[in-house]
Picture 1: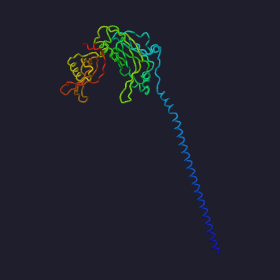
Picture 2 (picture 1 turned 135 degrees about the vertical axis):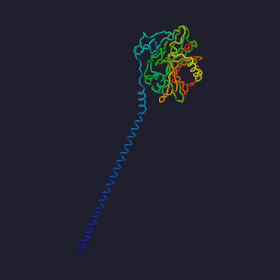
Picture 3 (picture 1 turned 90 degrees about the horizontal axis):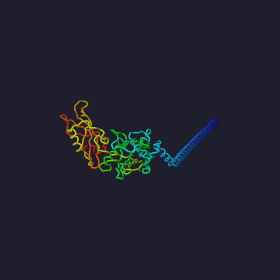
Length: 374
């Protein structure tokens, strides 16, 4: 009996041990499940918090959009020069004239003149209330000062004693930054030789058209000069010109005495240096054939170099052509102009070809028709 009893007792004890182990395993599994559940709940809570934080941030940012944009817009518009000194204050919205070029710091009331002979050197300075872009802002409010400055130019109106005005437009000049900032700037109407300062093109047009129309006559002519900024915008696929209000005015008496000769400062600044009727005639005929406007036609050529420049192939030294500089003068019904060109005549291996081409144009400039000398 003992062996059997011992076996039964052993078996019972084994069953009890297996039951305890299973219970322990189940408990551990339950603990792991609880831990996973708690971890998932914690991650979900963090996600919810992050989402809420982002939504709150967006809501706060949204509430700042308009003020921030306003602040950025104001900060993006730099201040202009304002009133630069006593001369600026005294001659605000005026144009003053001088016989010599004067810088902003050196000009004084003693330099200002009221009369000049036609063709004598004539400089000017403009004193503005605001820079050109700011003057145009009422008509171009959708653009920044910098946007406006990119294309801004100056219109110049010349009026003599109640006669019909001559409207002109300055060539573009100055950098975007300069035009955003400057409330005073200087220019030139008549000067010895070429100039990088603005103004010669407008006065030249006034004189050229004015002499033909009778706006300028022999004797003293009281000339009123008005300047206004001109902006451009393109919102429809086509440039639209926007004329600002008159920003500065000035008056000067221009004394027209005697005849204008070909050596006048109102004529081309490049004198003829080579007289060769054969070359002049060939260039003139080619220019008349290639001219692309009907408003005026070439009538005279002056060679502004001492002779031809021979062109050669850099590797072989073979002559490929020759070139020379010249001024082509044109006459129209309402004005006369001159243009500087580089004339290139090719070589075909046996000789220089008839014809050729014009390159390196320096642009058209107005002049009195008397500069043609005929």
